[in-house]
Structures are given as structure tokens and as C-alpha cells.
Length: 119
Length: 112
Image (cartoon, each protein chain N blue to C red):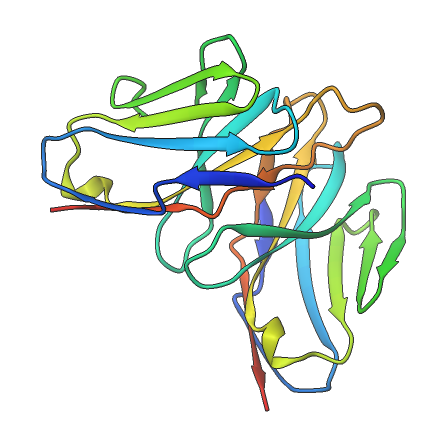
């Protein structure tokens, strides 16, 4: 159980285009999804937290107009990188948790990640 | 502020035990986690411990928590080459909506 998928697994795009990344919880309902960015050999940097049906909360320094997050259902969140530039090239990872679990932990289940390369 | 620290590298021989250490600063942590990341992949949850526990064992994995010193460790018994990966510890902070604070990750190298 607790499987999270991401699509696509990798994408190459031209500078100035927009790219959408999907994150799905396959066997549970995710009340909260998180989007992270990871540079090579570094830890995960939290970009934003999204709760189903409400606006995402962005971490300090993350441009909300550049990284659009939509969490329209309990199983799907999308991250759109708008007007992508080479410096946006990175590994983007999503995670999901079901905050309604009785006595539950804050356990986040992670997707496999999406490698974005902007030329 | 919240901060989680780990040593960056650990090298062991196959069959030995590995001990990966982590320190954290926030005393209001509720749960502490260990995740494993293989190259080019997402994070796999290995185990977690509630902050009022001292120890948790799960097959080859043993987690020790010293809350007084804010020190967490992960011991892997009989380490195998397939255990080579980056290991992240993370803490969840009370009333932060499930937000996790990650350490930098420890790269475990297992030599045959």
C-alpha cells in the first residue's frame, strides 16, 4: 500500500516553455501533498504544501507564479513550471500523506521523482 | 530554528553493521523518520519512531532515539551491497501540518 506515482519520470524542454508534472496517490487518499526539489548530492528542499481543495502554501523564496500547484482531488496534485529556464533544471519529487488517519503519523510517501532538463 | 544534521559519508564492508547518526534541534518533534534513496529514485520509507520511544527494531533495522541529546541513529545489521544508497533522517514538527525537516543525507557505501 501507500504508493505514489509521478508522471513523467523525465522531461526535456526548451527554455520559455511550461512543463506539467503530475503526482498521484494510487491506493490512498492524500489530504496533503508536498512538492520538493532536489539538486545533485543534496537534500530535499520543500517548495510548497498543498491541501486538497485549497491554495498551496509556498516556502520562502519559492515563486508561486512560476511554480503553479493544483490539488484538485484527493489523489492528484500537479506542479506546472511556467516559462522554464535552465536554472529550473532539477529533480522534482512529490510526496503525499493522509492526514485523517486515526492516531496517524505525519508519514509522507514519496513518488519516484521527475527529472526536468531545460535546454 | 529547526535543523537536522547528518554525517555525509559512511563506508562499511559487506556483512558488517552500519550505524548512521542524526541530530536534530527541535524538541517538539513528534515523529522521526529514516528514508532511503537509491540513485535517480524517490525516497523509500524505511522506518519511523515516535518521539516518546527509545528504540524500535524491524528485521535488520534498529532505530535508537536519545531525546535528551536529540540524537537519532539507524543501525543496519549484516549490511549488504544492496543497502548502498543515501539515507535521510527527517523530523516532523508538532502543529506544522505534516511538514518534514530533512537532514543532508548520509551516503552509505558497502564494499564487498
